[in-house]
Length: 160
Image 1 (cartoon, rainbow, N blue to C red):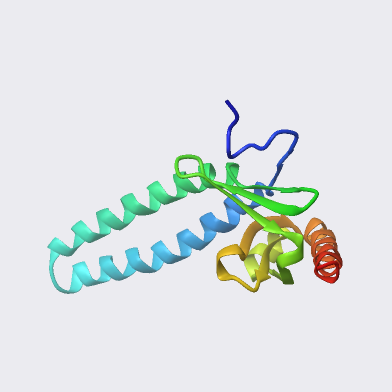
Image 2 (image 1 turned 90 degrees about the vertical axis):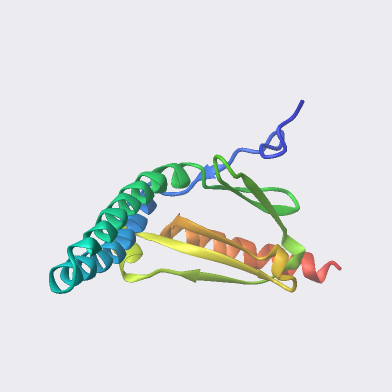
């Protein structure tokens, strides 16, 4: 029995492990704001608000632990007719974007991602269901993928 999330003969390239740091920093910034706000509110109004502080701390710890698992599950592969993006451990998904459907390719990076040398690639198609996003691609690889996907998309579209 074959695994629907691992097509035969396809080798997935994992995303950069630097994505763990980038996502963790983003979570820490968010939770530091929430934690400092709940601590200040607790001192000003009621000590019962410190329960919210404990909940925020628990959620931050859990999400930072979860990021490692999420990033390990991300990967992409270049097929003959489509670009494949695999995500998830518990709730898995495999997105196949046909090259002929790609209208344009976005490459984005924020200041934290730029510091760690990673980008996000977004493939846009005419249908929102087949559009796809891939985080954590090394910058040099993103440049190569952008050119390759745009070229293959144009070639496949011209062949229709």
